[in-house]
Image (cartoon, rainbow, N blue to C red; front, side):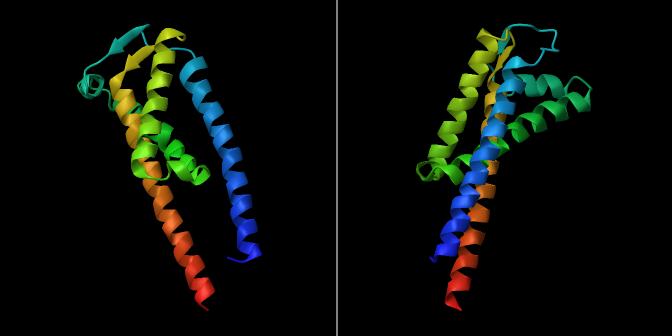
Length: 154
């Protein structure tokens, strides 16, 4: 790889690090420091798909979409940026486990410090979002490698 490509990779990584810092700051703010609009207060759900089922049966499609899509979208950047920044986390199992652990820690902190709901469904949906983000990273990474190989073959 020539010097130009190394410089591009270095700048891209620095750009991703800045975006990740901004994203992670926003994630912590949204999950730990925003007002709890739910009437439940400090509670927990330890039944998989329990809160998802409850929201689906509520008759409020906006509540269901906001919770399910929102939790998936919330961790999509995590799954994308972590393997972009750290090679050791590029394998699927490592990225998935780190995402699961991060979501678990956030849920525990929400319950303990923010007096909000600890929900296993949130952990499941967050991890799914990170896995989708990881898949997007892998796809773009393969396209980048293919483009670089094509360029150097000329």
